Each structure stands twice: as structure tokens, then as C-alpha cells.
Length: 361
Ligand code: 0PR
Image 1 (spheres, rainbow, N blue to C red):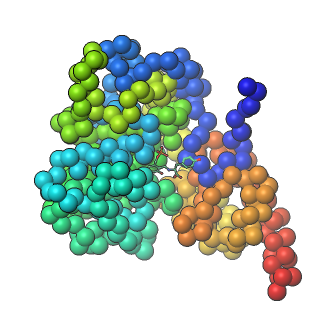
Image 2: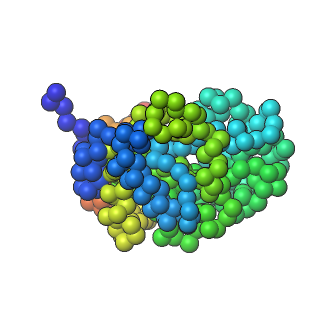
Image 3: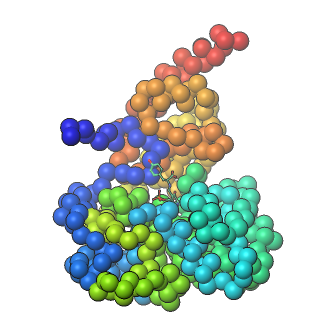
């Protein structure tokens, strides 16, 4: 097999990034271990405990329960599963803002719960009044997003937690992407800021670990009892994960990345990414595009369909929000030089697509 993975030098919309060298090396070293069988692979099982302790520190939780999942999708599915299993209703529902990731749709489908999607406010955050009106005695879980996939927005987490408490529902925060940048901002988003029950935070996104390394954390170990199944022929007696065999590479890589980067390296990366996002937002605004202010290092801007297609044609790996805006995620591999070259292409191609559009008239 001769194929090489594509380079990152034109990847602008992905939430994956080049892993830190230490994370890559650790992933390779632990490739053939399975934290799903801690009795046989105790070293990686110990590493997983370290990963969870580190993640707890990042999210303000002194005694965290949790595990390294395959990604944000599994973590979100499991959070819904915990809530569904502990709810005392036959007809559970989950209330989530419209900015919630599509993994919750998978969760609702797989777990047979009703998903209630609530509109956003004008700032593209969860509308707390709308959430309060939507919850009822059958609500098992309220979801808040800390770093939304499309616009990098942070929901009012303490207010959403209060809305969940009103109806005795659990409260989950999806910080899959935002979790490794939010500690360096003023946002209220973590277990110290609000009575959060569970949280998704993915080392394989801004955490610079190798894929697959997602994270699910819970305030109480007891919440995982809702998920545990017996594992009769293993040395360990029960398993709370969704997958069976899991990548020890992901676990080791998460620990290596966090030990290397927390907190100083992540802080410096946040500063670089945020400065880049603001630079790009300014550059696009100056050129007359409508830009959504980058609260976190993610820029969304309205550009025409022909220009979007022309940029893709130049090899830029870009994607669109549900409303059609260009979305640029300032991941660690996205440098100022890349963005300058992107904006130069925008200038060149905008002129060309404008001519093409007007000559079509
Ligand atoms: N929660 C949030 C807030 C997310 O943004 C994502 C993924 C997830 C959960 C699910 O995480 P996993 O994909 O790890 O299961 N958001 C990215 C997205 O939908 C996923 C992605 C990553 C897409 C890299 C493309 C890509 O190249 O945009």
C-alpha cells in the first residue's frame, strides 16, 4: 500500500488536525492495546485513568468519572443513554438547541427518545426561555453547547442548567470542540460554573491527540452504573462503554498530548487560533462579506455559491453551515500563511466569479 494521507495545508473546515508529535508517537506505541479489556491491558487502563484525571482538571472537576470514547458522537450518545436509563418516565425526551451536533439525532434514533430542538436567540446561542418552555416532566436531558460546530458559540450554561434542574432532568454540555480553548476565555461553561452532570470534550479535536480520542466525563461515577453491562468472561466484571474493543492508541495519544500541552501549549495555541480567526474575519469584512463575529476560533461568512465552488476547485477543503455560509475552523494546523493565501484566492476568484455572474445576466 503506497497511499499517503492528504496534507493539511488546504484543510480549513475540519475539526481534525495534525496530532502533536508526542501524541502521534504515543498512538503508534499503544496501537495494539485494548482499554476495553483492562484485565489484559493494565498499562493502557492506567493511562486512561490519567487521561480522565487530566480532562477533569481542564473542565473544573476534582474527582471526574469518565472514559476515552471513539469521539464526540459516542460521548453524546452515551450521555443521552445515561439520562434515558435513569429517567423515571416511559416517554423520555431530550431538549437541545438548534445548534446541537447531529450526533444527538443519532442518539435519539438509536435510543428511542424524542428529540426536541429549540430555536436559537439572535446571537446564535440557545434561547433559555424557549428551552424552559420546552422542558416538561418527561425531559430526561437538557443539552447545552460550549463551542458550536457551525459558529463556535457558547450557550448560557448556568441558565440552561437551572432550566434542567426545574424539571429534575440531567444536564449535558457538549464541549467536544470548545473544551480545549474555553479554559483560556471568560466563558462560564464547565463543572465549576454550573451543576453540569455530563460533558463531552474531545482530545482529538483542539486537544491535538490522534483520532480516535473523544472524552465523556460525569460528575458522579454512579451515572455510569446506568450503562454498565456484565462481562462474564473478562477479568473486569462490567463495561460501561458503547464500543467493546477500543483504541489504546487514542487513549495514550490523549495523555501524551495533554501532558505536553496543558496548560501553556494549549493557551498559546488558543491565542494563535483566535488571532487568526479575528484576522480572517476582518479581512473578509473589509472585502464586503457578511461575517459572523468569531467568539471562538471559528469564522463563518456569507459568500456566493460560485465563489465557494471556485475555492473548492483550487483545492481548499471548505464546508458550509446549514445556512450556506463558508465555515473556517482555525485549528492548530491553520496558519496565518494559509489564511493569507486563502484570502488572495478569494480576491482573485471573487473578481472572476463576479465577471462570470454578471455576464450571465
Ligand atoms: N459535538 C460537537 C460540538 C462537534 O462539533 C462534533 C463534531 C461532535 C460532537 C461529534 O464528534 P465526532 O465527529 O468526534 O464524533 N464536529 C465536526 C463536524 O461535524 C466533525 C468533523 C471533524 C467533521 C472533522 C469533518 C471533519 O473533517 O464538523
